[in-house]
Length: 409
Image (tube, rainbow, N blue to C red; front, side, top):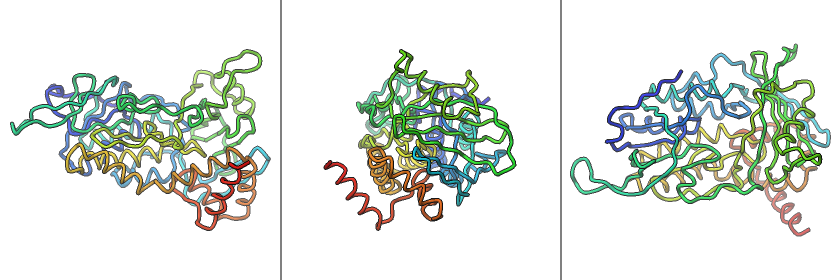
């Protein structure tokens, strides 16, 4: 159990950085702030008690582990077996299974998130249990008596110089900024479950099976290494509807998962659905003392649904910006520039590819077929889908022209 350590004087102090949400983005934000300024007063507020389950594919790409190591967390995947193969199957039957340049891991979020929160606490962050409902921008007297300082008041009682919203797809902090959520065309919905799997003779591999139904959509099976696998099925919210027999949309998701992965039936008690706000509809990070990271900032890869790497990277950058800015009101601008420098080009390229793939399923078929014999293409696809990869300049012009021509038809 991760301890809750609310200080007796919490309500009377001004918190340097209040992080809303204790997932990967929130923990990385706390770690980033404390790395930049070890003596900062950093508080993580989360409504849940850790460890807790979190609906996710549980895939941890090496890019996210790089960020965590830079933050001083070296045991995030300790005890879990690396998975260095990924098998992709397209609706047209194209398939590729190649060892990845760097291994991935599959770690249940119940374990992964608790480890990150504990690491943030060990660095000096406090964890409190709160469900955040409101933000108020005001000012209060400085402790040194020299005038007043702008602050953000959360829930009418917690006062902070900077607030980082890392509270997921239904972010209360984002709503508090007056920023709308993603529309259905830029929001995916997925159902996840756990299942038992037999240990095979070959190396473990992650499996992604794309389907024509509601394209772009796919099912996945990711082996954890303990006799279980994380399985799921996801698609765009705008493409999901109830069944012709009157069944609910949730039932359609579950039935499709069972049909696509018939050999690994889901444990019914572990079936849970969740939303994934895609990066094709990211809100602009506003100036000021409130920052958005991870899912709250719609940082989900539109091609793969990957979000852990984006979460820890954006959280780390937000934490650094929160204490590095000359004054709290400048934190938003500092963070926005840092995030664009790290991910801007990558996010623009994934948006381009997602738009093309959504209109032309054959593009994915062709790419996967080519990747069977071109290792460098396979590695590029993995980097774009799981990391911060970009499209080579030689290919970018052709793809942009194809998108233009597709739009004219």
